[in-house]
Length: 487
Ligand SMILES: Cc1cc2nc3c(=O)[nH]c(=O)nc-3n(C[C@H](O)[C@H](O)[C@H](O)COP(=O)(O)OP(=O)(O)OC[C@H]3O[C@@H](n4cnc5c(N)ncnc54)[C@H](O)[C@@H]3O)c2cc1C
Image 1 (tube, rainbow, N blue to C red):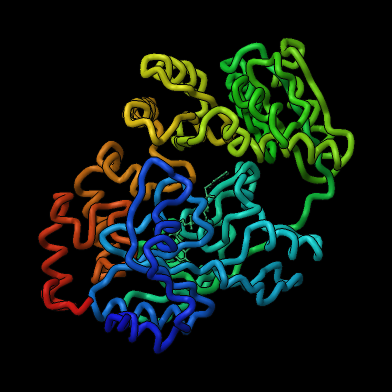
Image 2: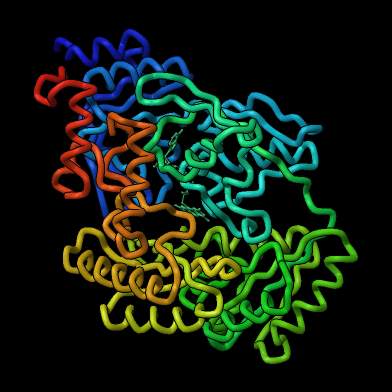
């Protein structure tokens, strides 16, 4: 078969065997960790270096064809799902750790480096990469940067953005720019982090590493009600304490974990467990441990365990980190919601969420970063069942609205993607949305980088009705009329 002109041009910079256009192969890239929504792509590029990214961007942009970067595809808001005929730039093969500098406490990496691999490389120098999403065995640092990801220890150490010193990125005209944090001038690095691939493709990053703590203590406290565990978290924070992590798992999650390979010895009779980790200098940790025990009302709890050695600590964390995977025992699909409420409203939010679950007749469980008020109500379902899908979407919608009404927001760490794009007006005024669109337009006037995400944009924007016509007009000024663009 004669290759299409676009394929021929791509082959000038990317070997043919790394350009996938077979329908079945492409279908594997139609979704990410959010199984509720699928897209469609005409082609996938398995890219191995920056020169290939630049070449591919130039070829596709010249033809007015959109593209979306993909790391490991573990995203939970549909960020890597190809929309509007976007080609997929799979960058997971760009996984070189170029340098670890223990004196500067930095590492220079390619975007496809797996989060845990970076942490292991840092560990050889007594350092670590602090953002630790539960998906850290699989997700890429490029994906973490695009989503401004979090993790249990981000409660103390801050989200990914705090740990990225500089990024190198390929803009939609093929220009390569280095954006630095402390270089003076406008902090463009900050604007790119969390932009979910809608600005450009990251090809390199300089990350900050932090020392591994000299002392760590980990506790598992069991409660007779989920609300009581939330109240304990509020009390710990109100007491002025700052643990490294405060994670809650509810009864259904505990049962799923204990029935799975992630079994951690959690008490199956508890309604909730709270995993508390303290870190720092030995004296500080000792003092904090006493204060946390008082604040968490341990005398009123139904169980308490302290990890006395590293294997016990790893066991306690194995359950938490494996919780989403363990849910596979309940149903084939899991919709992981991600919303934030003020910590003081967490108990109220949890009670109302349980009620919403019952009203919509969905199977709901909770595992979440309680310290940040970052809730993850999880709905187990079968995506092949249309009625269940409707129930899940309706319950999810109501839960998001509830969290916003309690003074919270739409996402703590999973991003907006395509999942919550239409919920953006719940928290942003038209002027605020317009300002975000102005920034997006300024960085990518073509609208070709990951269209259809976060804000209505790109060639589908006229249907979305948000500043669509103006944007399309501008795109055509740059690229020519859509029907003249060679595909
Ligand atoms: C079991 C499980 C547990 C999870 N736990 C957490 C958690 O604790 N905390 C958390 O924050 N998230 C969590 N997630 C969500 C997900 O792992 C994170 O969002 C992660 O950062 C995505 O990385 P990825 O490599 O899979 O990115 P992908 O899913 O491939 O992409 C995510 C987004 O990043 C963009 N992107 C990827 N690479 C680049 C690049 N080089 N340049 C520009 N844009 C790029 C994509 O276009 C897309 O918009 C979890 C997911 C799962 C499945």
